[in-house]
Image (tube, rainbow, N blue to C red; front, side, top):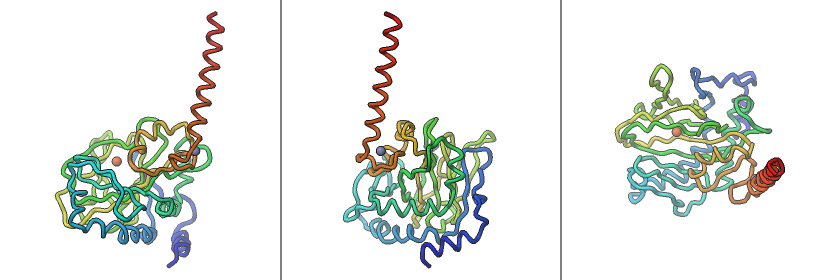
Length: 276
Ligand SMILES: [Fe+2]
Ligand SMILES: [Zn+2]
């Protein structure tokens, strides 16, 4: 089935409103359901580019933890590989515009933009910063954290790429009533923003890999880049900035800082006039 046909058939399942998205309790977190076929292109990307790479004996080191890796994948520019030291989890980030587009296309078909836009300060639209495959086969302990710093108008989406085995299904999160558990389901994504404290529920080493899709996205206002960058800035090599330019090819930030300098100079001038 073509991508468009799938999208039309999916749209036919509901009345065109954003009723598929539901808030998770009173948290800054939402759950959205979709037809798993919408993951087909991403699944193909995994099967063609990531699975064969991870089957090589020499690449098992990327899954065991204990070492920080940040490197290209041999013969593949589409993804960039990162691990964060001690914790055994492998992050493969979109590293070409083509690969980025696959994730953006998936995000768009969820049709959540209208809903999410109402939640955050923005100018016109949502920007996807980066897409990831998150691959692991063990979670030795809890790893409590929030994804974003206070004031960041941005979200993380997480969803399984394939049917998950039972031990891989659990995400823990904090609420006023204590620790709660969210169960990952194929065809359902969880979306959460600042203040949502969460951790993968620990699980023992498995034969099968646990593969999740993760997407970071949010405001198109560049003034928030400072606070968003604290989270997403080091997660990937290629990243789309809120202004819609790739990092490294954007001059808006320079303009912004020049504007800030001009304003600061004006204020100083005014102040020095006052105290003269
Ligand atoms: Fe997280
Ligand atoms: Zn820019």
